Length: 289
Image 1: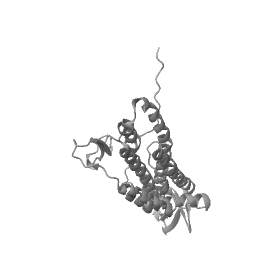
Image 2 (image 1 turned 135 degrees about the vertical axis):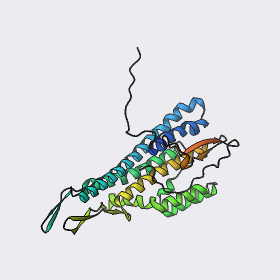
Image 3 (image 1 turned 135 degrees about the horizontal axis):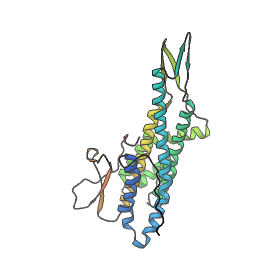
Image 4 (image 1 turned 90 degrees about the horizontal axis):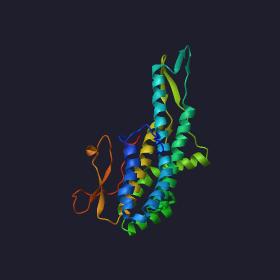
């Protein structure tokens, strides 16, 4: 008699979610169709298991950062609505009372976003790129002098596009994001509180705290999207770079992606497909959050 099968629910999202389609299923599909393709049949099960062992902590940290960003957006939206409708405020002569606050859960969610975001890219992503994918990016997280040496090495080894991409990532957001965690852990930085001001006898204006010059929910959304896009770009780049076969990666135009499975990349045979090969480059997008 066969043992019963068990199906365990792990997410409320399906393949129509860009996060599931691209960072989860998409990268695992490329694991099978691109990375494992170059490995001997006898070594393939071990290589697959090792890849998955490195992939799991990166994915879990990235998902935790995304979950925190979604929670921040939910908290801010719900609180603004509660203040606007009067549900969370009571007006009295010469006084108004805020009946609900979000300072503590909002601060906790920001802490989670920053901590897990750093774990996802500095630990998880760096580890899987180094082993098994053979791409070293440790210099990305080091001081300027070490970073410049790493960039020069990429230029010298014929990877100018990756060098340009990493320079943009570091300059646009990663350095500030990493420094934010340092300030939180070692210098006591914490998120400021929500500010309220009476603008009429029955109206309160609300100002959300800012992080790195952005309103907290905007910072959360942008940061989570950047983290996930960095993971997707570098893992696909590393797998493509090490593949010895005449196939290449093509980026599917946004308007051509299947809404039910919005994969961003596909593989194409070199010499048989006229599509332009994907070249890694810096961009911001808001697909994941």
